Image (cartoon, rainbow, N blue to C red; front, top):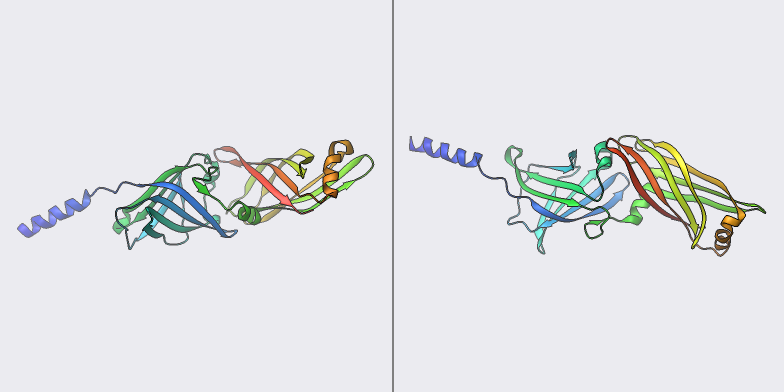
Length: 258
């Protein structure tokens, strides 16, 4: 019977073994290998010991579970724990769009036997703080938004502005834009400011949004002069999208060669 008692005690000890406290996520870096995939690195506090042979993992952003495309690569060194994994954007749930970007709760868990967490990292990240979130902005705009075919044509009384804004929706669901506010400048001169009504961005597709407007010559004369000097054009604005939690603004900033 002593052997049986020892087995029972060992099983009980295993059952009540505490889940290790989550490591604090200090910052996140993101790379964009292609427009449908994000390569994510969580930089967390140093772990007491590297867990090897994880049987699985899971990621939550707020209350939304996000499927992960590759097994996690966990390394410890230089005073931090690095957790690397890939996310296929067409598997991200729509609920993620409704999260507040400057208070994004993040929880990653590495799973052991029986899918019990054996290593975890948790934090609340401000996506707009470069100290907490490293995003390759130039790469993001190249992948998901671009301004092309820009023409500024003056006449005696007006300036005709034509441009094509191309937006790619990498998600597996349609995104409804309820409006687009934008301002086009050339050099330091404003050419036009306007608002466009809503439109739908189809899942996994690139959608073209035509910007076409005549502006009184007196309002855009400085911009025309800047165009003639070959100064760069900049489109800044806000794309407002509908989410399950309400409307959310997405900032836009794109340059186009003249």
